[in-house]
Amino acid sequence: MRLQEKACLITGAGSGMGKTAARMFAAEGAKVAVLEIDETSGKETAEEIREAGGSAEYFACDVSKEESVKEAVEKAYDSFGPPEVLYNNAGIMPAEDHSVIDTDEAVWDRVFSINVKGIYFMCKYVIPQMAQRQRGSIINIASFVASMGCSVPQDAYTASKGAVISLTKSLAIQFRPKGIRSNAICPGPIETPLMTEWLLKDEQARQLRLSRQPSGRFGRAEDIVHCAVYLASDEADWTNGAIIQIDGGITSNYF
Ligand code: NAD
Image 1: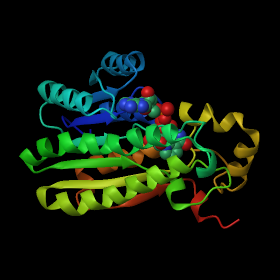
Image 2: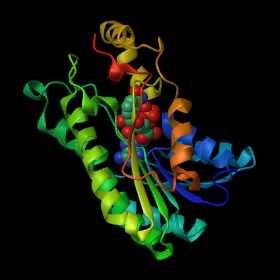
Image 3: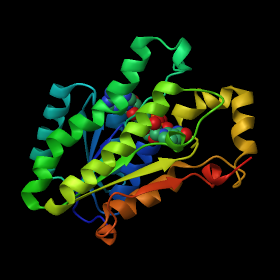
Image 4: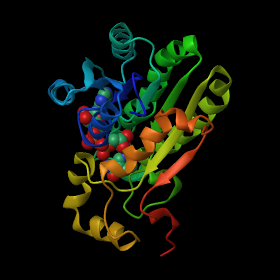
């Protein structure tokens, strides 16, 4: 029970790594606020946790819309009290995001509005609440692609995740003196709906990535969330500004 009684806000918790995080955080005793744009999957996540004896509630939230974020954060505060953990997990990787030379402006803007502006809005409303008690942990999900080029480009996504890393460092420096830690996890390719809907249907992209993967398999959501549980817990008191690659070793592989 490493997260006993901690109020944890998890964005995009209706699917993939966010959903696994909601389940694993609740199993560690957390009170989980499921912030999700998709009502059906968000409600399902919260209900599954409650049925398993955990504490969770669904709050409708589009992280790219300031009013929606403000409302969800206020409602979560009313239900669970001051948040101790903000897990900025929501992100998109649309198939239309390709090279800069053939990606539409609207696609670029959509990716940035969720992957980057979403974190800005969440931090804008959650950090002042955390600061009241001088404690908190912000976990931002970036990606291994932020530190690598890619022969199958997804330029808006890659640039957005670079921005997540930069923002994480700035938050870590600004807010640690106020008791709030900020860290980022850079997952390698993980088998979640986000990836299976795109990459695993593209046999060439799949084989390229597997051939460079020293662990011989794609990641599982749990591989990432074990690290997030640590970052959320008091064990990570001196872990701040860390950018943690969890990728099976793919980014270390000079091919
Ligand atoms: P997923 O598609 O399975 O889940 C993402 C969730 O975010 C969905 O439930 C979706 O409804 C929600 N969401 C989308 N837009 C939203 C919005 N505007 N407001 C609130 N919620 C919204 O994806 P996943 O693979 O679990 O990815 C989670 C995070 O990990 C993302 O930030 C992604 O970029 C990152 N990531 C994924 C991989 C991978 O290989 N799967 C690798 C590196 C990083």
